[in-house]
Length: 104
View (cartoon, rainbow, N blue to C red):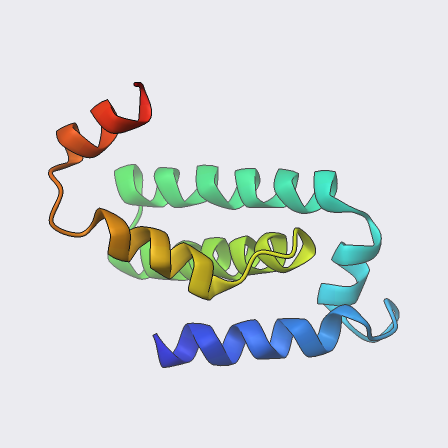
C-alpha cells in the first residue's frame, strides 16, 4: 500500500507540470474521457495477459492499469483513501451479500 500512496503523491505533483515534460500532465490535459479510455485499454490488456500471457506480462499490465486508475482518480478528485475506505467497508461481507446491498 505504501507504493500506491507514493505513486498517488507523485501523480498529484505531476498533474500540474508541463505536458511537454510529464506524461501524467499530458494525459490530464486531454481530459477525463481520455484518461478513462486509457484505463479501459489497460484493463483490456490486463485481461488478455491473464488469459493468454505470461505472469510477467500480467504483472506489467496490472501495474499499468493501477497507474492509470490512480491518474483517473486524481483527475476526478477521488483519493486512494476513499477507495480503501470503501474496501474496508466491504471487508467481511461476502461478495454476494455486498452485491445484493447495491441492488436494493
